[in-house]
Amino acid sequence: MSWFTTSRGRVRRAIRAVSKDSRAANYVALAREYSALGQHENAVRTCSEGLELHPECDELQRIARGARAEHQRARTACLRKELSVAPRAALYRELCELLLEAGEAQGALETAQRWRSRTQEPEALYFVAAAHAEFFFDGRRSHDGMSAFQSADECARSLPRDKRPLRLQFEIARRCGAWEDARRALARLLELMPGNPLLEARFRRVLANCAHSKPLQRALVDVERSGQFLDDEPEEAGTFDRESLRPALKRLASVPEVHVAFFLRGNTALVQGARGPTADRTARAVREVLKASQASARRMALGRALEIRVEGSFGALTLKPGSRGASAAWTSRPPRGEVRAVLDQLSDETRREEVAR
Image (cartoon, rainbow, N blue to C red):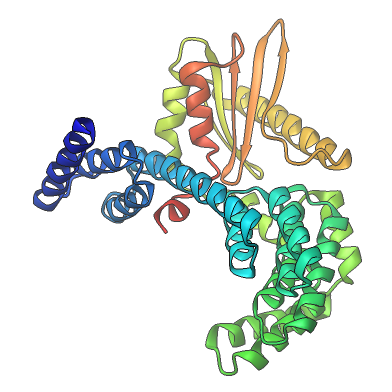
């Protein structure tokens, strides 16, 4: 009990410190105290407030990710226990949402299917569709995309006032270039939200693309073959914040065991440790390893590649694909410690705006 009282006292002191001085270090201290007490919701809220003032603070981002994950785990366990005693729609809905947010699409799918089989609740179909959509966005397999679209269509027919399945259909069709299907989903959304300026603007843009529309099945197959969505194209132009990445790349390249460090996004590469033609040739070779590995994983239905490593007499080449791009390092031995930590940081899949929401 004395430990608890002391911890609460530290929290009060940390709160006073933040109110007097809004430096990032004070927000970090308060978030850590909340996490130590298991008050993960308070920790996430503190990090969000701190990140509004200090968006560059990596430690606040790290604490927020950990606290959010701990809160999700605790709440997920609680919901599963409650469902085993008194299953009802509100609990199933929250559990599916939490699992999808945590990236556990398979768990969300199984939960939604169990919900559907027990209650015949049409809302469960939306979460079946959302789980299949996550599989599709992750692995680019056409059958996942079609399953998501068809389940969303069935849900929309059963729940004609629900906007979620229509939004999901629009997102799938838009990202594949099935513009006619995207137009139909938007038209139905506009019936539910007439006069919405954002939807009307989107409808005009989609309508302009309908002359180049593909049938949905063909569009899904094209994505599976190429491994790319239409909105992947801006990445090919290398539109990312180079200056925010250079410090971490330089830190990685400064480790004695690292020969060359890379960050790859589309056809653009940042390289530290090599220059001129050597840097260009090496970056192209690393990009080919990345693309070939990802394509093989899709063809074999293995899911998304989380880490790719090639070892030999040259040392080790390690690639870490992420939503921001792929980090890579050519090292004298398999990566560990600081090298692995920086690779994870560079390819971190949790964007700052997601942490701060």
